[in-house]
Length: 148
Length: 397
Image (cartoon, rainbow over all chains, first blue to last red):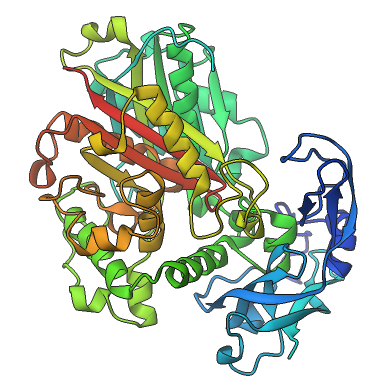
């Protein structure tokens, strides 16, 4: 709203705080899930869902490893960042293989030069402040830093 | 799989030209393709039993798309099956159309797709349609980032040189200059050396061109009815497969046929191709022509490997040895690819491959015509290869 436009803007196709709330365990501490039937591990978690490997429905929370190594690196410099991330360009992004075999795509933080993010480098999870929700509250979640 | 009661014959199709007027609504774009497809097929609107329609337009996604599309097409009260599955969703639309005819439920079916992507209110709305939103887009990772990451991983794993990507892009540009329907038709040809350069500008030129608002349509009939419309029946078959939507889960996902692979192979496309070949009884060696949906040159190379035209990791050799050209045993991307024909999303990314193969079989492709095409295959993908579709066109006379 402004003095010229006194009606509130209708916000649609934006996300609610409820969505963020539901995914907090995975975002804050990398909580995935494990199938009690066949042992398969999943991230993002599949709590309440069906295991694609054995087709049973017996998922339990599983704490993913919080360290791993880089298996791929790319620079986000194409100019179409996700909303709320435009101030941080260029960002260094990576696929990380955690020590338990789970793969994540993440932001690499505290990188001074992209050459620091070599494939094979050890990394560890940190909790970071990501951006503001559409409602204005801050969003927190995982990021990764070089561990060595 | 159940019993297939009859073959499906394609009798016509159409796509909107590049740069449709800015003031055309999604309804006008959809009708343009639909109407022209019926005209090419020689089918009256009243003969059509069903329309399967993929769309990529948030302006209608949250309400009730079926009746809106049927109303625009003048099709009420007959059924429209609305499908929203990103760029390759018109592959699913054609799958619905195929099933309706192969099962005997319908005689004449149209597969339609449209996108008016500038109806989006923000990149947020567009990006949030794909991938595993809660854990990628919401954490700042877009499908464009997915694409960049996959290309980096593929190049590293298989030692793919920039030169191969440059040649891929160059050949797509070459074909597009011979296709009046391509976005870059009539534009100056880029230089091969420029396309092979290790610069951000060259990297952009090796990626897809935006086609803007676009729609396409294809018309199918049951085999025993085809003689009413054509004396040159062209058979159409289609198969598709899903892969996990989160990029990390491409690494050894615990499902047969996927756990052997990682981000550098399209295991879903391999499965779709296997089913398509089973349906049609063809082998990769019999394919005369291939069209792939390639938002980057690397996407295209990986697709050639997944459908069996090349060994996994060897598409670079195929391209550098002239495998895409008209002189090749199996030319690739004669329509111009996403790079030069233009990325049409739900409007055309699957159907343009089918249409090009259909027109090639009929010998209607002018300067880019491939000789003696009998079997042609096309691929498309959506939501960063969590959906992969394969279409097969076969000459029936």
